[in-house]
Amino acid sequence: MDKTTLKQRLLQLKETFQDQEETLTELDRAIGDGDHGVNMRRGFEALEEKIDDNSVASILKSTGMTLMSNIGGASGPLYGFSFVKMAQVAQEDEINHDQLTQLLAAFSEAVAQRGKVELNEKTMYDVIERARQAVENHESVTLEVLQNFANETKDMVATKGRAAYFKEDSKGHVDPGAQSSVYILNALIGED
Ligand code: ADP
Ligand code: MG
Image 1 (cartoon, rainbow, N blue to C red):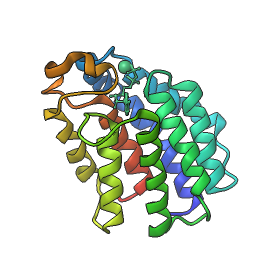
Image 2: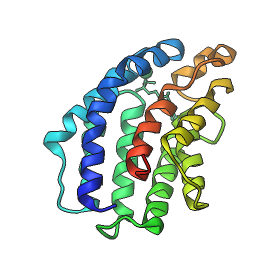
Image 3: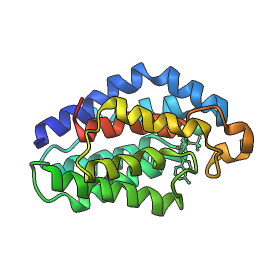
Image 4: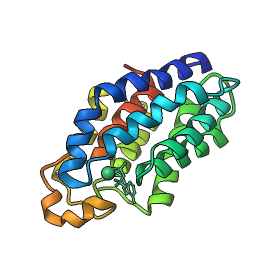
């Protein structure tokens, strides 16, 4: 993937999050405060004006800064910081398999570090880290594969973020951040 395609794929997330706003709102209503849909839509609506398409690094960095200042909630700083961290490891303007693996490692590490989160705590991290592993292992990571990773959070009990207040009652719902990260990873990985 080159920088032009990356830019297009990130800007297309505006439509994706407009279309999925209601889904994310519903998920966050069940185990949170219902703001995840509007948070994600606002973040990606702001991107069109703010994206700096000079290089892959500048695209990722400007996306991170925009998400940080426009998303709010717990997910804003997590996604924002992650894109800034990915920008720091972006070396070339052509994202080959090695570079993608490095970008996803930076994404996963950033969320783990900032969110103090591990696998199976029912967060976005479950999708991000499993996607990273799959890409590293040269597995095909389609939208369907990503969706399956998100669906696995349904049976988990949340131990991080607002959903943790629901304890056992958080079971039976897909985590909203896991769902939004399906779309973000699909844009970055670029198979669908
Ligand atoms: P808020 O919880 O502040 O309302 P959002 O609704 O926008 O923020 O985002 C909620 C999502 O953020 C959760 O579904 C979860 O995936 C993610 N999240 C929350 N806390 C953490 C954490 N400590 N580590 C990783 N992800 C987290
Ligand atoms: Mg919320």
